[in-house]
Amino acid sequence: MSVVVLALLGVNAGPAVGGAQLGYHEWQVRTHDYKATHGSWSTFELPEQYRVNGIHAALLNTGKVLIVAGSGNDRENFEAGSFRSIVWDPADNTFDEIPTPEDMFCSGHAFLSDGRLVVAGGTQRYEILGDDVTHAAGAVTVKNEDPDSAPATFPKGTTFISPEGVVYLATHEFVLPPAHKMEFEGGATVHASEVVVWAEAVDEGAAAVDTTPGQYTVGGLSGTQQQNIYGLVQKMTLDKQDYQGSQSTYVFDPVTERYNRVADMKYKRWYPTVVPLSDGTLLASSGLDGTGQVLTGQTEVFDPTTMTWAERTDLERYFPTYPWLYPTAEGELFYSGSNTGYGPADAGRQPGLWDLSDNSFTPVPGLRDPDLLETSGSIMLPPVQNQTAMIVGGGGVGESPRSSDRTATVDLTSEAPTYVDGPRLPEGTRYPNLVNLPDDTTLITGGSSDYRGKSASDNHTSLLYDAATGVMREAASQRIGRNYHSEALLLPDGRVVTVGSDPLFSDESNSIEGVFEQRIEIYSPPYLFDGTQPAVTGGAEEVVRGEQATYTLAGASDIATAKLMRPSAVTHATDVEQRTVALDVDQTGDQLTVTIPQDADIAPSGWYMLFVTNGSGVPSQARWVHVA
Image (cartoon, rainbow, N blue to C red):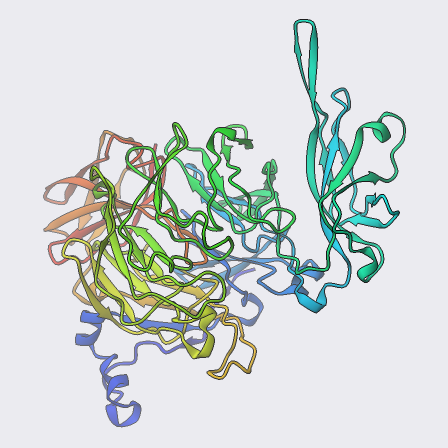
């Protein structure tokens, strides 16, 4: 069932609403001259039945936006098995709720070349803090030394018994493969298989605490299983227990608007980054595992042909959670230094270029405030052919109140890439959202100067950065604060939508618990107030790298640029999908011929929005184009 949104708030009232009523600034921001210079924001409430905590947002090639909450950072929802996703059509403001089979809260996601969205990982278990930990628990490494056994599935509740007879229960089902046998002339070697499982004591209290490493018996086994399968435990404690990752993988189909289960990841991941590579595969990196620990560098790749994951033991590389990894024109991955949340302060924080051909890593120096990279924002500035990346803001590790007003750019084509300082932000900013626009400016919006907006520290100033000139200027201010768990993405009509925000507190004195922001706010950039938009009225939907395609125009006598813009899939202000591909153009009358770049590292296969802009920088609405 669909529903049309009726309640629009803060819409652009005309200048007839005078300053005496609203104050001079409120009157000014409604004037056409102000909007043509700074743009304008509008806000609307979702119908009550579609209000979700927007943790993830992705623009589908249907023009609709998938907003994923999962459990929405709400333990009650998680324990009730209440997981939610909605699809919003911004063209007519209608919504549909999508059946959500598992908790995709804090998963990773990336588009396949056919437009489907892979959603990998999520939440296996919520964290348990301090005095709330009542049962001793810890990781059990379950070993199997039998190479001739079949893979064995063990249910939730499988028992592990310590040498002292204390009983612990597996909190989730697990699958234990057979041992690996390597035969050679005259003999063979056997390497035990293993899987790491979280288990907690049956009985409450300190009596179940065990800090002595030991071998545990697995209950319910007999025969050869009893001889070959056992658990190894380092410790069972009443310490804080972190979030735990899931290994489930789903593919969301924009046509059917349904999730379809595919093969699990090799590792459980919470807060992972999933990045599309130029060959059409997806690479998954980092995240918290099934015991709440940051993965130590395990990398895996998703093959869209087989719909399966394969571990890449040759590509072990440690990063904090949600690392910003972006494919470069040389086939490397650039780690900007941006990350979100988990990991020690002294590991994996150095920006650099990760060469996937040999797993080497070349540091990129030059950053001011190098200890304030967590919760920063990053983006590849337009056009992608220039290979210039930007980092914005950031804060200290964990719940630090520190934040940076830094911006910096790096030319990845230089012989020795080094960050160079850019203009400063008006204030220190964590969680900024960065969105490339069709006029080749970049919107910087949202964020807060303190951890999760503490002490009413949301930043409402938005900025427009011009990569060609290096100039940053003020845009219209957001009315709604956006900090942790917020997203922003470009719509096909040239506007930018912002969703989410999860403040820790709702007041300056940090005495009232925060409320998740469920309203949507949309930014209309200045170009939407600068005359008639050109229009692309006809032409090819399917285009091929290295070849030309011709489009019919209306009201476009002076086309200056054409570009392909990849749709976003964003969470925690992290979006590794964004790229703006400049196209060579040749206009004759109402016919525009564009040339698609040959290089798959510049224009990987997939769906893009084709925008054309006139001599004044006013863009068309997008036409969806598939690069084959």
